[in-house]
Length: 87
Image (tube, rainbow, N blue to C red; front, top):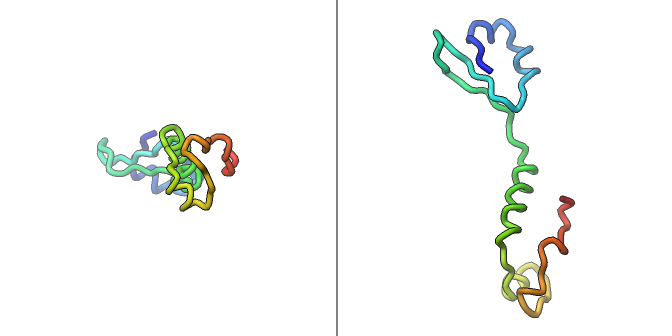
């Protein structure tokens, strides 16, 4: 959504309260001069990265010891079976 900076100033709190996941672009003389975005949720971002990592991660015997796990061989660990993150 685009809004002129003068319009934005006049209705600042309305635009801030209604900010959605779509960026709000502020314009001046028809050119975009700024974009307002909602902040990322750090927990959701971390969970998303962990889900991506789960697809390619391999746990070695040394790595399992670092985590306090006692695994005989890397294939004994299954990321989905040891899911304690609740997703």
